[in-house]
Image (cartoon, rainbow, N blue to C red; front, side, top):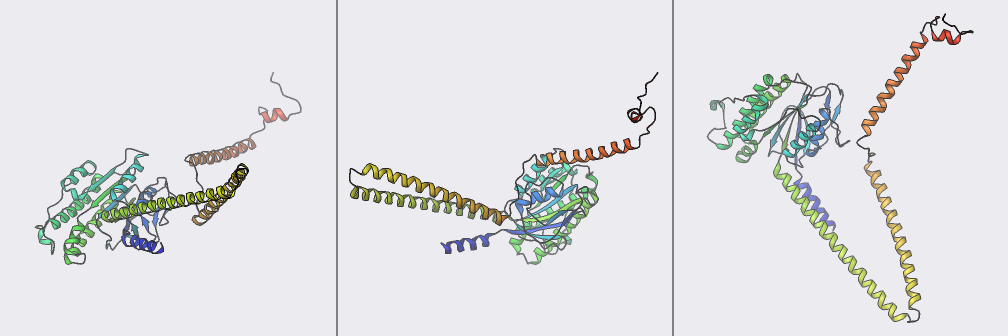
Length: 398
């Protein structure tokens, strides 16, 4: 059993999907620090928290801190690089990323989070691998996109005659077209915006030429230049109040992890069923053995008394066993809570009631202070109620 456990751990470590999460720009109100690993399924919480939305899972990641809740980013720009484990981006704050879901799932969850509050947000996802379809999709939010033709003379190793190279160069030109259109097309408002740009042509370049080849290094240089252009364009459009991130996503590894997890779940379920069948069989064999012994040793005249005594002992034993199981469960539960240091669970109405009581108490205290000051400065003249109530003889108007 221990050998099987070691094999499973080794297999899980071997297929663990790793990637990079890079913060290219963040305003002073949102600070990213440390180097703690973050799961991709939690990116929606991280990005939503940066926009000022309520986080549904608290204490999930310590790499982000909000220093000024009144000057939060007005938009999030996410550049997703599909099929790649890591990126050699010279700028930005880098965090290890555990890729446990596909990028479209993360996008859908983040979009639904924003649509819960307001349906008037600018939420754009452009898959640059779609080519002209991506251009037509971007027209609705950024206006007409016009990618410039590719200058083949500026290329050293890449070639337009190869399908993989041409696909990658078209995506790079689309990034430049988006960056060129952003400063004039975007008008910041009080709404939170998301721009989700998906790059899918770097993986074919690496698979064809190798990750350390001259062609791959030229492709990475062009991509890094396009990232810088996108970075500067959105900072100019939002006057620095924008969060720009990039992360890698390899969907093949995500599917591999899911298959391994399902296989383990099936194996655990089968093992539990086998254990239950073996335990049930042992109990039945033991009951049959006890029955035969009772028939042989107990006289017929004393059968009723013996049966009653056995039932009483069985009930007492079952009750003791139940109490022992309940005590064991409570001990395990208390140990688990002490180990995990779980927080208290609050209802959804807790923050609403808390804010009502807080601000009512503030207004009540300041109102009481204002009334006390007004009464203390009141002129005790003949027309004042203070003069009338404190005089020795009540005054009457003639």
